[in-house]
Image 1 (cartoon, rainbow, N blue to C red):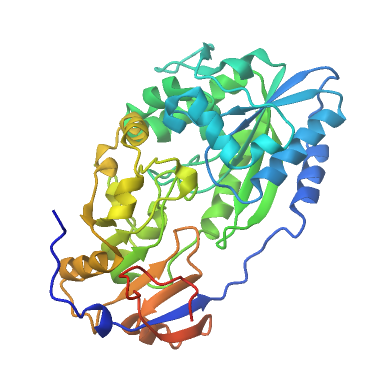
Image 2: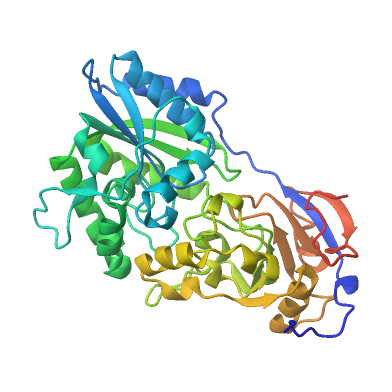
Length: 423
């Protein structure tokens, strides 16, 4: 059965401009050199002959291969040997093969370091934690573990520790057991229990070092810091504040329609960064004050997601091609583990891109000629966007906004979105 569509002509009545938002964002010119410097200055040394596990997650982090490669080189320079372990909770379909595939998909299988993937965990001293405290079995068998992760605002909650080293230690290394145990308490489990679990893992496990990365608003590495395990709880909130100050943001606060070319696990843990789109979809957790967006359509799922469409419920409309790319088994595992079931609901499915736009206009209840609309590639990249004439008029007086093209139409004769950078 085909999707119903309002009368044709809406696309022809809406003109778009492609704009670029200029921002003086700091970035590391030499990421490899910065990693080398912070590692040798961190004060942690490894005994010769030791076997070291390097924990890596499921996020699409810029310069990930470079950073992990330098960590491996640092370990080897001290006469130790290294291997990688997936530290991603229940992602990758909650299977060892799936988690290995995620790391290989990021190019980590080609850096000359073995990957040891398992869903087995080893129990550690729980102390006052009301949930199990566990860690990856391969990592536990090593002489030491190093965790590598990006620090950034979380898409589910806010607190002193959000997405970063603490989360990877508590949930990532804890595999499905820890993910289910902490998510069972909702956002309280993340905000309050997660740091307590991480403290126990650090105190009774073998984590010796965390390598924290911070991105700027352009999805570029702006800071890297190697932190001895005993100082992670102290330092991470400072890095989180830095990341929050440089979070990608839309240049306007009110939109009738937002079109997102793609979402996925390599973009955000929930496919689209909730801090960017202004939606959480979690009972009891307030949505961000801004932006305020009436209707959101998502057109594609990134290949690196391996069919995991967690977060698709944040959209109102998706395309048929998006729906066909969803692996419902993998998505269900991730969504059920998180406990936020609404985020796993399949939105209204449009047969093609142009129909998705028409449905968005109908849902927003505004004329095509005056709609406040924007189009972005994904929520990691908000400095380049298409905006309707109504939004372009608002941005016209902003010296930080450069107009690169005007009079653009969204769709070609095949009813598909035109290339984002087309003239």
